[in-house]
Length: 58
Image 1 (cartoon, helix red, strand yellow):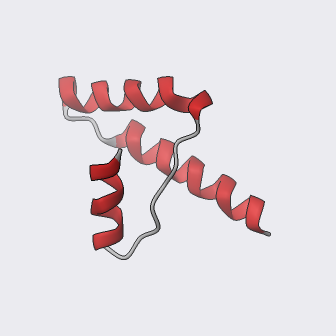
Image 2: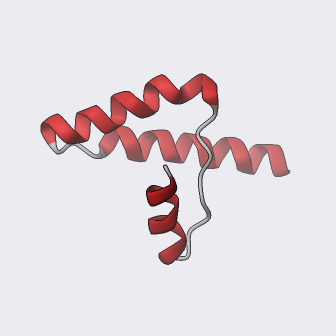
């Protein structure tokens, strides 16, 4: 996750914190990319986290 946040911040995006309750989804998304080169589950998970953060900060 540290590497991933480093990539985000290098592209001027805020880091993301995957909450513990979503760790299973995070690992599933990583596995999807490893096995099938499918990045969509990770993008979906990150967007969900960003939306929750935005709603929290409102």
